[in-house]
Amino acid sequence: MAEVQEAIAYAYVDEDLFDFWQIPQYRESLLAVLVGRWFPGQLAQVKEISLTDDV
Image (cartoon, rainbow, N blue to C red; front, side, top):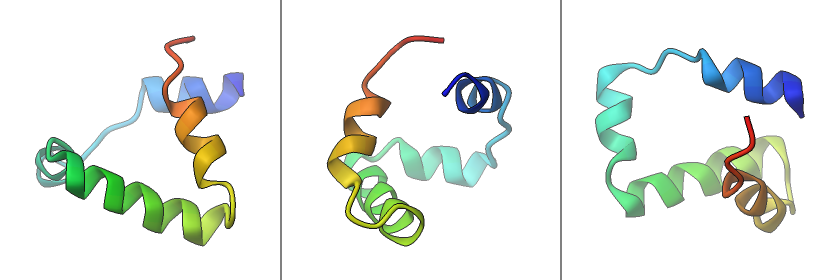
């Protein structure tokens, strides 16, 4: 978990993608698609983890 948090802390995001993420519906859709592809059946768990502020 610490490795993931460190990678995220220094991630670069394209400006257009950042703008896309600002719209809650698009953010939810993107999250569902990515989690469905890479972590099938674990959307609720990923959402719970994403709510933590631990760095």
